Length: 172
Image (cartoon, rainbow, N blue to C red; front, side, top):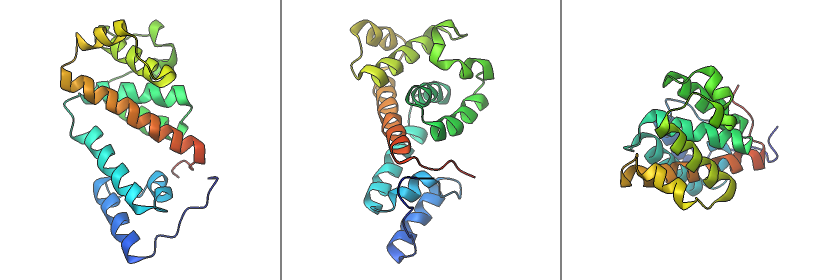
């Protein structure tokens, strides 16, 4: 059970934001967004940034999901893990590779994926990224993709901390 009660969303202003979330999230109103409705402006900003990261990026879906799954596992964000593990499987990653993602150095990942995982791990655990790590990823990704990767990792670290900090309930 979440640490804070989910807010009432019956007001017309709240309902407008709820409908926008549903429109952008395939008819769903996830608990993550429900909790944010204490401040609809936060929900709005969160939705816009999340949509930009997920749907308006040159970073390919598989790379994005790999980074998100590492963030989810590293931070213990089960809600995030369940949602993005499913998407990563759809992108062709094996269950074994995903289940052992925190031990990715022993996994079945190629050079590009390893560079992405190293950057995501350092950014998540240390905030700072070593020059060698950044250079390895930069060799394989365009400047725009590098910015999008760092943004993706940063955004999903924020998501993880929100989910874990408030103990947001898993979707039924």
